[in-house]
Image 1: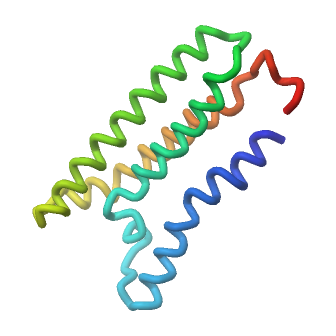
Image 2: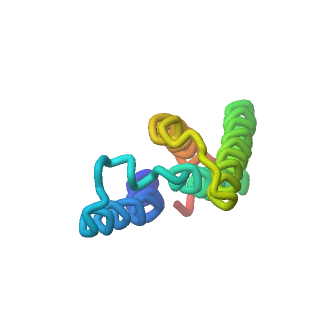
Length: 134
């Protein structure tokens, strides 16, 4: 049940702005492909937010699998740093009106998002010792 709630309220609310951005682009005849909705690094911000929220859920509870918890924590922190640095690079380029590798971003950020979402799901679903109230 925890996974369903997290997907409905956490993940769905995180990607809702992308759906709305796609609708706005479509209404203004600027929608050429689905990746237009995340062509400026939006998926990176969503990935970072989901990772941070799920990591917070993971670290406040003890787990019967401390090794897995430590590994998932390290991977989450790494992905948070990567997404922050990657977005910072994109934002700096946009701010300075420089070009950036938008096609690379369009094709790789969904993969990064999928990996981050998988990692975040593990954070949420890893059994916790203090799980009686959930």
